[in-house]
Figure 1: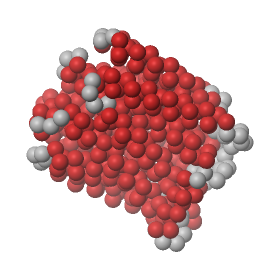
Figure 2 (figure 1 turned 90 degrees about the vertical axis):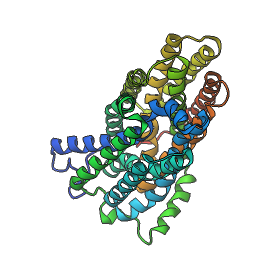
Figure 3 (figure 1 turned 120 degrees about the horizontal axis):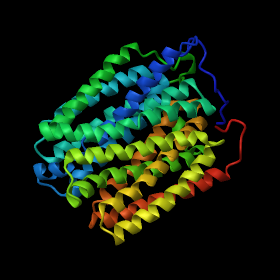
Length: 412
């Protein structure tokens, strides 16, 4: 499973816009990858400000409406599981187009939901549809690059994409204030249609010579190979636990900011947007380390310390400024972990990039699907603090396991 360090651009004919030295093509590729990655953020983040309003609309409990986030994550996990091997067999572009069409249908149907159960079903199908864009944002760079260059591309996409979680709640709050929660899903359909339109110019990045041979179903055997490959799975655990903590924060924040501290939906979106910039900053800082395993280790320790401070504040104090100031380093260190975890895992699994990206995404959404509803059990401040602490501990353990792996020449 060890990969060669393909730090140079893919050769001519591979489909990368940068082939032939065209920097403008590289910029177009980065811009489209940002759009694909941002779409996954918008699917979850844009309707965050509407969660309290939706509990009233559907006459349901907080944990029940938070299941909308969980169902979306389960759909994203299942979608990636199915689409990963399929994309290794048929290529990236057909999977992208088909999955975006599925999302448009499900998101459009959710606008007409009149009970929480139908809405949750729509969210599940939305997750399946959004999975294509989300995991291909990681898969396409792994088709074209390896090693340190792969890390740079992913960090650049991640840092620019920091504007997605920054802008999604802001836009969601503004749209919801004017058009209620249904308007958010109309806007998401428009985003998906925009990605579909621009996919016409996207070149296939997986040439036939590099695709899985045999039937589509034979590609699912790659899951067994990757799941038994220790270095890859350690970094899946690292990224997954960190992403689960982010989703726990996302799921709890509307109720803490709006219901507990009394902010409006628009103000909530602005606060979330400001916070997201620290995640983007952490993502870029990871590249300053000589080895990304060092960045992961430093990020995991920083996260553990910051979460301990935040948990103490959530149990002992009840002041917005204290809560917010403690969040900033948490989000910063999460950014470091996202860049290092993504690049380390994808570098190990880039022989089967579609399947590897699917496992990496599934790992994060499995953590997210469990943690999102758990933060709403009982006192949301206390339950959130406990969930934060458990996930930070798992992240630190994974960082120690990563650090113990033998150093290799291709280590990004």
